[in-house]
Image (cartoon, rainbow, N blue to C red; front, side, top):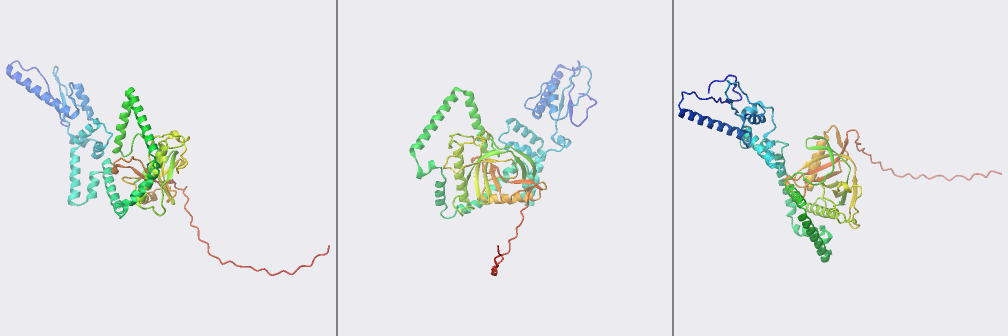
Length: 480
């Protein structure tokens, strides 16, 4: 091919000059040279196509465009007149990684495979990126295996494989949390007579329409008939409007993905701004919003029992769900929102649903027999700590202590009342437990605005002193 000046070794560049063969060569020799040259050209173009994209470029301009995706232009050289060049860049992943700026851990790219909302194009690009960074992946696996097998440091191996902040780490932490929570709940649920007590409490927690003591067959049949009629009307309307049917199908498919989402989509949520973040907590400023709340406590002295907590939550949830789905004086149905809130204060334990913003001012009136209170939540600053799994009583107490400990060293904000907390539950019931997003939060104020409680000394008990006045001698009356 001849020697061409001006070509540097890194990155490797191949320039193929194509000339007319000398006339003295035989026709067979010319045919062999042409065949070999064509095969080499097609092979090189195939390599470029595999490394750069799904389709092989057909011109030097397109090849230059593909090479620019890798961040470096193709080097070219001056050739003699009449010589055509085919520049091909051979990409070396190891050379690229050494020249590039520091990259994020490869686990961030691997998170694409567990992201339910990732597109096929993003997943294909993730495969290419991991292939290019395969050396880093092998080193990570080798280090994790060494930590787990030789040093017997399972926590260290987990930190190497799943760095903090990645979605894979959240999944692993969620699985650990669910295992711990189940171990805490099982001993209590396996006590004698637990099933009998569960049956009694479940019956008491059902809505009135499902309670055997107040069962009304006519009312139930009438309700089923109206639901069937509404469903029939919706099907007929969808058949006449294919676009609406397509939208409903897409909405149903998107909602089904909430099984794998940490934060659901398609639900209205209160607006907030993250003011600061620290190790295991966030400081958020919430805009005002409206909630419908109902008490959760039932029998006195039952608080702290896991079974009691479950039945109380179910009863409160059913009461609020009936209200927002139309069981109110105006018979107004409202959309479901997130999160579901639980207020935990001394002597107070209640559940609340956030109402849609369109009903913040003009709120449907609850039925008289339902113990539902409409509350307007003011703008406030909250310290929030997230945790996965189930919001059991023991888990809530553990997260309370962790949030108080994290805020103790915060120089900007302090907890306003260490006895008042709220639990936020963001997911529908069908979300996988280890992917669930729960949060414990409490009101905070800027340092300097928090008034420390002043200890009031108990007054000493003083014996009452009885003072007996002596009788006064009668005074003489003055003369007029």
